[in-house]
Length: 289
Image 1 (tube, rainbow, N blue to C red):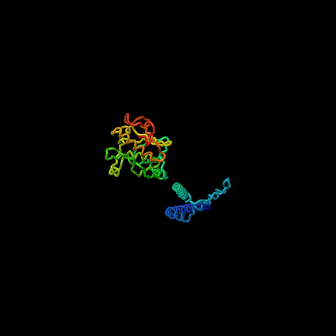
Image 2 (image 1 turned 90 degrees about the vertical axis):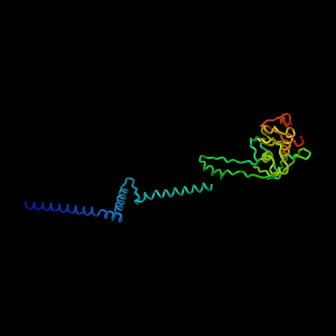
Image 3 (image 1 turned 180 degrees about the vertical axis):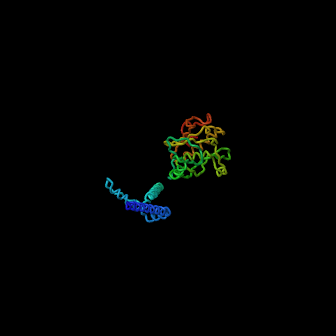
């Protein structure tokens, strides 16, 4: 009986001893937790254990495939790699996007002319295309270049009073800038009137001031000149009508492709200008006066 009590007492002491040891280990662990964690991270013991456990689990998998161990920084490295790839693709796409007169001057030969406004020079307007106005402007400036203009010397006929009171229609040379319609540009310059040099030399024009050339074209040697209604009414009467027609016809027939001129008013044929003045229902030549 005493032996059994001793045995129980010894067992109890042993249990208490191990409990005390465990408590001591816990206390030491709690106080040294940060150091222990740092040591484990430096030695990567936990990573090795996890790698071995994953390797064993993959080996026992039903598919029989072994999983490739990956480092804990693999996920963090994936995003920068993809980002760099995207930057290379974008850069490549950007690079692809970045890289991607005769001696005898014929008159206008437009069969279906559109109305134009008189001016000494013709201005070209660039059209914006695209949804983005800024991008469209840049593309327009790069892809839509204005056609090159030309400058040729043509004869413009103006009126010069004589000492006996009569008037003469004489030619004056003028450099005319145009793109593809030399006749139109020349008649417009004639309607605009003499320049300072011409006026100083005594030349003037009897074409009514409000006259405008709406359109012009040439067909089979006939120049069709379409004027507005103001062209019909000359304040200088019959002599003024004759002089203005001579200015127009002489200037137009300077072109080798023009033999005669048909006057139109607002797109229509009219028989006379200025009432019962001069007949213009048929084409007129230089010898018509």
